[in-house]
Image (cartoon, rainbow, N blue to C red):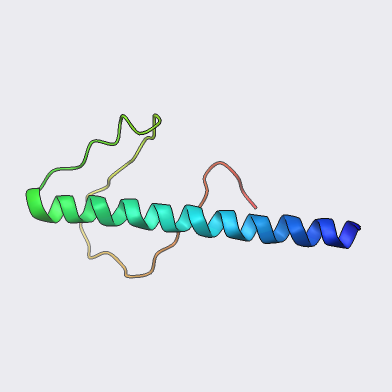
Length: 74
């Protein structure tokens, strides 16, 4: 029963993290498209109090996407 509980926990965690990653990539794409089209940043302030930080880079961005959870370290 313990092994089943651990397996269930890890499976649910993987599914949730994958969904969060997909949501972050979608939001990144929306922001990127808006910046490219109108040189403005979309207003996400009404979206559940989310805080989005946009940094202007002086060097080219890397194609590798690393998504980290700043609240939960695991």
